[in-house]
Length: 142
Image (cartoon, rainbow, N blue to C red; front, side):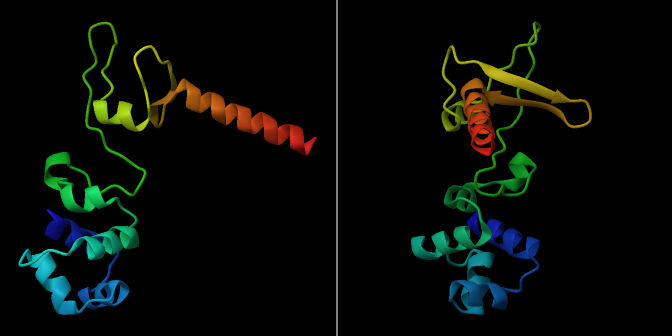
């Protein structure tokens, strides 16, 4: 996977192998071998590559664009897959999303919608923190 992801990220940024090699301080030949899958970058170089492209190390190593149908997401952005809507409108939030956003049984989520853009879910506690921050900023401005 890392070889395909490296090649995809490099091409998405319109970089040559030579340009990428200069950025992470290796030779062009090393980049070519990594992209062909003849060798793999060590942890140090993998971390440098992930940081350079602004993706997580996990995504660099494990993301499968063919399986998910989407390119490697930038660090902090996720693709959790799909959820089927039940008979009464219920959905199951994927486990990884619940873990990342610390959504636990009994927590509330805020559902917002835009007829052009669709629906969005946000944990109520995150919305409350945002509103508290806005109120504090307004008080400072007064």
